[in-house]
Length: 326
Length: 168
Image 1: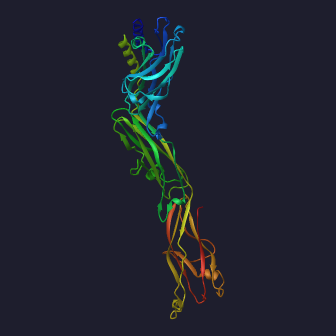
Image 2: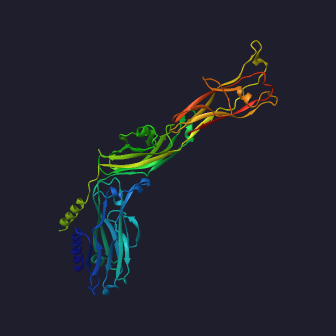
Image 3: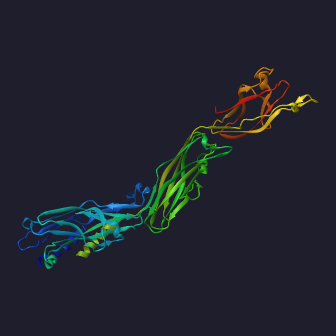
């Protein structure tokens, strides 16, 4: 009974400490009459995984099969140190469970690893104990580096996110009534923030190729330079959604090229997701929209309709993509 | 104590949430190049026919010429300075018994013109057929005529024409 009260006090102490973060050490009484040395359990709480914002969302996502941003914690050390007098006492088993979530956390997207769990794995459910490690009776010190990650969705709403995790250490060789008596539990909080974001990722520069006589189709037709399937990703986590626009910003062309940017725009076409080609212009034209939080990857095709006025030289058209929130 | 501290924690987290942008723009460059090019498409070989007595009019003592009209030539180029198209005879074939000097007398009877224009004799020096002062596509129609006379002895006649499109 004495030990149980002592552990209960420690739990309150831990939560109180969480507001400031850092390493927490708590003492729990070991089982057995002959051992007065406390068992020291050291852990980190809260574990701050940081902030997900627009900068977290990189160009790697442009071609990814599924658009997920992994937010990963640093190592969160956890150690259990048993005094010498208690070293040969009992085998201890350590468990973890997901206790509750803070904010819009999707529990299945939260994963952990540490102890005997070497690969990231989600929790099987809320409040279900999962083994972390077994500490043999003759092992004085046990430690691990816990690590957590969250597969953030691009639609995760802004706000504070957190997961409360509860740990348990118990001695399976004790009789049932003593097991409960000497069981120790403690909690940590893993938390992160999600900023409000509007994300626009655009593919790298595109080269359409070179105009040559093979594009002339007598008597008076010309082929086109084409390049298909360039990704443009739009994401937002705000209600109301966003709209995607494109416009021709500037152009580079040979000095002998007649008509300048306007002439290039007249022959330069763009289409999205296999739709109809439309010419670009110097005023923004809408390419698509997101009705609400989420993401969408557009596949953009470019086509330049060649004609005889395309004099020798190098051409560039700078397109500006813009995502705006209404 | 437990709830008070938890509240402090939440407040500290909320402060960390940023306010995102409502407009984001990014640019991308699409580039291409063009080489200087000329395209020339010339009609197929032409057979003007076989001359017999029907080509001769005894009343006027004149010959009906051999003709082939509106033969298509397409020339196109993208050079800012334009391009030119020239024509010359580079090879010929006449019967051994042809009485005139070859090729001068033979070529003097072989005429060409842009359809609707004026015939001119074919020569062994390039003659200007068409030119442009900038990028252009031209679909030309060319007429050929061989003026018959009594010196056109029996046999096979042929002339090889060379069209050349060039940019200055």
